[in-house]
Image 1 (tube, rainbow, N blue to C red):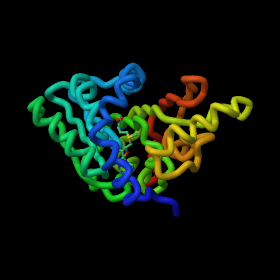
Image 2 (tube, rainbow, N blue to C red):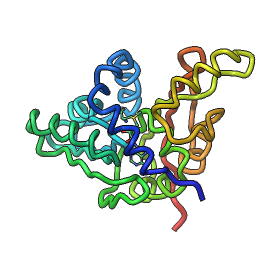
Image 3 (cartoon, rainbow, N blue to C red):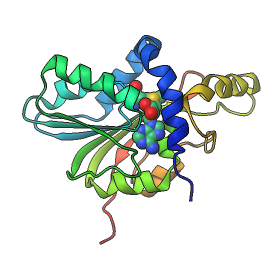
Image 4 (cartoon, rainbow, N blue to C red):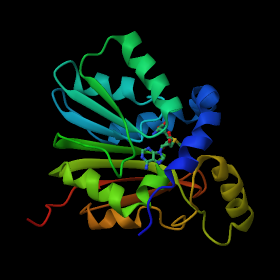
Length: 211
Ligand SMILES: C[S@@+](CC[C@H](N)C(=O)[O-])C[C@H]1O[C@@H](n2cnc3c(N)ncnc32)[C@H](O)[C@@H]1O
């Protein structure tokens, strides 16, 4: 069964970490949008899947407030160390970070909401999804932003998609419907292509899991 190539992810993000925040600045409007799609309320518990340098953490922390909880999991030591600095600088006592692959993470909470912001590799990994949804309560809100192939008739954009994505992913599998494995876990997944179909937003609610 496919799972993330962790060594490759760690190696790629060792190189990206120092410049990551600057390169992600232009995607902040989309990040705000996807976090807004979670409809977070004060006091809730939210998981930031593959949280990277923690660019979503301020938005999530603001939405759940001091009474809520934010958990970030990230496999790259270089990326998560920047997230840790962000949390320490802000002095948030209710934001917890775990250095682990999503396939191995020990998640001891039940989440009210789960954010997948540009987490293509995780979305292609059945064991990672299994672990995430074992810790997600039925009815929890799920929001996703990510990369996808544009439609076949936009052939040059498909090449652009591959070239732009290559440094940031360890697999191109599933690029036509990157959310397809989520459908088993999310009841009413609604997908909206954005940026000429080279990216997408998706949202839905977690299904009740078989006992
Ligand atoms: C494109 S970055 C996105 C980071 C963050 N979600 C954001 O919104 O800025 C993808 C991140 O996924 C992490 N990653 C890849 N596979 C992972 C896995 N199986 N478990 C945890 N993190 C993973 C990478 O190390 C990288 O930090």
